[in-house]
Each structure stands twice: as C-alpha cells, then as structure tokens.
Length: 225
Image 1 (spheres, one colour):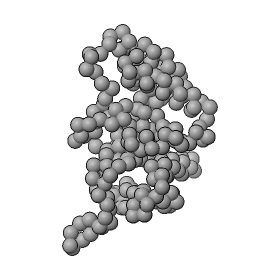
Image 2: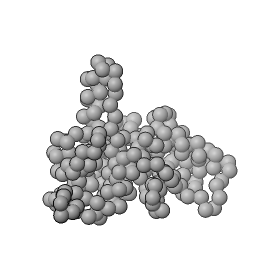
Image 3: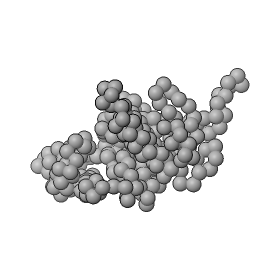
Image 4: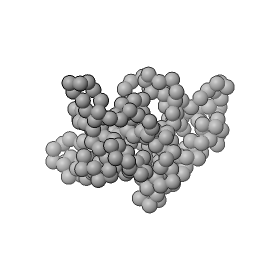
C-alpha cells in the first residue's frame, strides 16, 4: 500500500494501528492531486484483491481495506511543541477524510470521496453519488461519492449500472420518485448486493405512493465514527 501511495506522489504521514494516513499535494506541489489520490486508492484496492486471491483459501481469512479521500484547505507543517514536532496536516478537511473512511461500513463500499474531490475528478474518473451525508460533529451535509475507476477500465455491465443508478439517483433527490423507481430497479438487477441502490429503490417506491413532507431532504446523518 505504501509503495503504491509513493508511486502516485503521496507523502505517507503516519501509521495508526492498521491505518495509513497519507497526504497528496504537500510538502511538494502535485498537479491534479485529487485524481492522483483516486488512482492510488483504486490501486490499493486492486492490490488487496490480488492478495486475497492468493491467500484466502490457504489461510481462511479475507482482508479488507476502507479508504476515505477528501480535498480542501488544511494546516500543513511541523506541528507540535518545542519538545516534539512532526510534519503533518490538521483541520476539518483531514477529519472529514477520516469520517469518510469509517462511513464505508455503512454504505458497503471500499472508497468514499468528499464532494470537492468528486467535483475535481469528474472529467477523468467515474464516480457515483451515494447521498448527502452529515457526519458526527458537523451540521453541514456534503454529497459523498464512491469511485468506480477511469472510463476505459469499466466493464459494459458496470457502465450500464452507473448510468441507470445515476438516472435514478438524480430523480430521487429531485423528488421525482415515480421516475426514480424503474431506473433504480434496473440498476438493482445489474448489482443486486449494492446497499445504496437497494435503499434508494425501497425509499423511492414508498415515496412514490406516500410523498415525504415538503421539508424532506435526501440527507443521512451518521453518529458513529
């Protein structure tokens, strides 16, 4: 994992138990650092799939990795006291990346990226919006995405799934629930185990018959880290 991060220009900040914290764009400027971060995340997931293919049957254990990516302003530099300092990053942008890593458990995903990261990679990376998410300790909700890969890397079935899902998701957030149902149902047939597709289809079906209150918003609040 660390080698893959380095290949994409990351600075490995620290190891925290079984976690790795990495920064792209500091200490050296890195053009398109959100895209580099997405590519590093995808490479990490692919590397893990190769490890599991080789060892799961032999040792009876399957490894998993969750990744959270976020882009924004942060404090960067030698932080600490006169007795002990470390080059690191701090701030709400960093904290949200950590929350996104944990939120993968709720969505059944391996990679979650923040709204700003998704906006910056839209031209070169296929992402899928999941919800507007309000994490613990924050009032403002942001739209979180998962990453599927660069357009040329997707299979025809995955491309169709993303397209159908996107149509259904847009209709859902715009309260056009009757239109959302068939698109999400088609996406569900293509990927029956996707948690968010199943959730949106269930809610859209219910709301098509019984619309929510006028102040309804497509927001999920997570109280856990």
